[in-house]
Length: 400
Image (cartoon, rainbow, N blue to C red; front, side, top):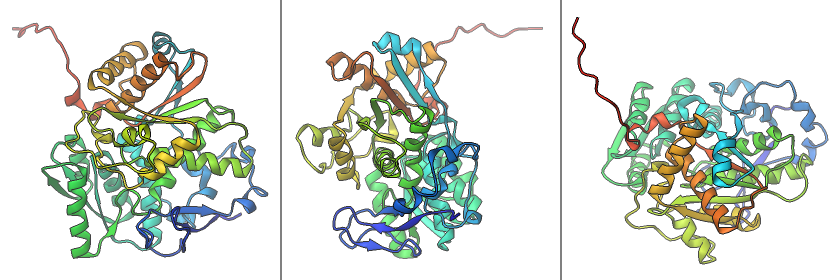
């Protein structure tokens, strides 16, 4: 049986096709490209029951991933993260069925490992030797570490305010680190210049087609972990929005394969009040977002003033009857503390934003008490030590 059933790449705007056997970036019209698979053939040779007994990683879905040969897979065991029912926190927030998909347990400590595993594996298969990318921290760390495993040189540009541990992950893995006094869009400008001057492969969000393929496996896992009975709602912290786009892509693929049926989960894009371009566009009924000036939030991973794939994020929301919601810094901090104190889970600020958003939507009546709700925690809280205050009783020095 074939390892991958990838057929080609397609532009979601102008419908132009590209080969998946050559290095590709954006479509000639400027849009991101999406991987398409021969699902009509695959559904006759692979059933969801065939997944039983496969390796407990995202590569269990290799037929719908873009790497053509198993020998080109660069893996650290990423994927199949826990889907936990958080009962005490859920009860306090008014839910009977609140779940947390905990991505903090993958290699590198964040969901970015999924996109890096698949993106780097495909880049290596296509012969890439050096890549460059802007990052808010975690993606750069993940791509640097996976690039090291693949023998690829990574050039990573991140804002000065990015979590310090992510800088160290880039450096320790041999990546070239560049710091910029600004936000992710400023890092993007420097990355573009590096690529122009040196001919590096552009691994920026959605400027290569395969990061999204790694992220979409969260959707496959959620469906499988629920026994192919989908939840009612999935809340996702949204910066570049690749995870949300990917989950929606996975849902559509599973529909075509015949693995799921019925109404799709309502998808919710969660942002911070200090950087909410998707929320603003949603509330105004727009198909694309405007650049968000002076963006700021402690949930650094979602501090993205303008996402290249914003039209795809909004499409996934509209087509599933979902919504976009912004939460305050105070509310996401309270949510982070609630989950830690009631469930023993130290989640990242971005993940906490989804918990705060669930509470906000429950109070407004948009979410029902009995609905099955999944919140995505996209990273481990210990990667953000400066975002949490602590108290201690000083006991003095013990003299022998």
